[in-house]
Amino acid sequence: MQIHTTLFYVIIAILLIDAIWGWILEELNRKSRGLKVPERLSDVYSQEKFEEQKQYRKVNHRFEKISSTFSLVVLLIFLWFHGFAWVDGLVQSISDHWLLRPLFFFGIIGLASMIMGLPFSLYQTFVIEEKFGFNKSTLKTFVFDQIKGLLLGAVIGGLLLSLIIWFYEFAGQWFWLYAWVGLSLFMIFFSKFYTTLILPLFNKQTPLEEGELRTAIEKMSQRAGFTLDNVYVMDGSKRSTKANAFFSGFGKNKRIVLFDTLINDLDTNEIVAVLAHEIGHFRLKHIVWSTVLGLLQTGVMLFLLGWFVNEPALSEALGASKPVFHIGLIGFGILYSPVSSLSGLGMTIFSRRNEYQADAFAAKYARPEALQTALKKISANALSNPTPHPWYVFFNYSHPPLLKRLEALDMKVLK
Ligand SMILES: [Zn+2]
Image (cartoon, rainbow, N blue to C red; front, side, top):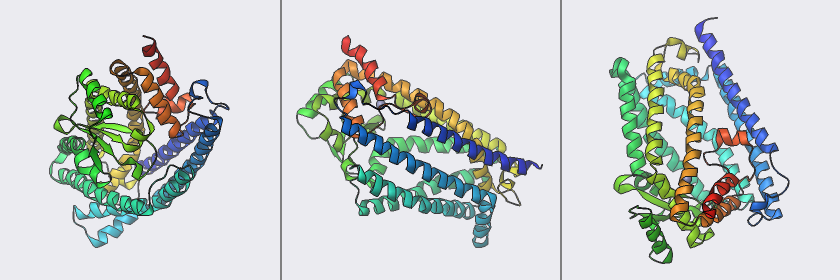
C-alpha cells in the first residue's frame, strides 16, 4: 500500500476510535445515575427537581448522540470523496495567490461547518434549554451572536492563518518557531484584553455598585492579600439563567466578572466565598501556569507540524494530486488529535487539582460552609449531574464533581 493510502486509513481510524471512545464514556455516564437524591443534596434537590435533572440529561444525551454522529458521518463522506481537494480545486480556479487561496479555502470550510451546525444550536437553545427554563436568549440575540461570532472568527482566524502561511512561505525550516512566537504573543494579548475588547461585543459589564456586597468583597480581598480594583457584573441573564463567575486578564487589566444571575441566586457570604475561590486561582498562580502549559502545548504541536509539513503524503492522503500546504494542515490536524487529547487529559487533571486548591484558599479567607452552599445552589440550579461516572469525570471534567468538593471542604469546616 502506498504511504498516502495508509495515511488515509489511519485518519479514518483515528476519527472512528475517537468517536467510539466518546460514546462509551457517554453511555457509562448515562447509566451511572442514581435513583434517589444523594442525601447531602436533598436540601437543594427535591425529588421533583431530581427527576427534572434526569430528564434534562436524557434529552441532552440523545441530542449529543445525534449531533456527533451527524458531523462524523459528514466528515467521513467528505474524506471518502476527497472533499478537501475538491474545495481547493474550486478555490484555485478563482485565485492561485499564495495567501488568498488558503484563506478562501478555510473560509469556505469554516462557513460550511457553521451553517451545518446552525440547526443544532438553534434546537439546543430554543427547544432543549427553553423547555427546562434556562433559555433567556431572543431570536434577535441569537442571530446577532452568530453574526458577531462569524466576523470575529473571520478576523482573528484570518489574521493568524495569514501569519502562519506567511512564515511558511518566507521563513523556511524555522517557520514553526516564528509561528510559535507569533501565536504566543497573540494568546497573551488575547487573555490580557479579553474582557475589554472581546467580551463587550457580546455582553454588558458594569462595575459592582457600592453597598453591603461590595464592602464585604473588599474586606475579604484585603485579607487575601489581593488588590481588587475591578469587580464587574455581567448581564449573563441576557442568554441563560445559569450562573457563573470568572477571573480574567493580568496586570492592570485583571478583573473579576460576576454573572448577574449569580448575584440573584446567592447571598452575600456565598458570593464572597465564590470570589475568594477566584482570587485563589490568581494568588496560587494557576492562571500563569495554565497559560505557560498552553503555550508549551502549542510549541510541541508547531514543532511536529514543522517536521511533517513538507511530507507530500499528508495532503495526498486527503486526495490532493500535488502537495498543498493548507490541505496538509487538515491532515496534520486529524493525525495530531490523539496527541492533543492526551495533553488535554493532562490539563483537565491539572485543572481539577487547581479547583481543590482554590477551594481550600477560599475556605481560609471566606466561610467554607458558605462556599459549600454556593456550590450546591449553582449546581442544582443548572441541573447538573450529582452522580457522574468516575471515568467520565476523569476524562472530561475540568472541575471535580460536587460531592467530592463538598467532602474536601468538610475538613475545613471542622477545623
Ligand atoms: Zn475554579
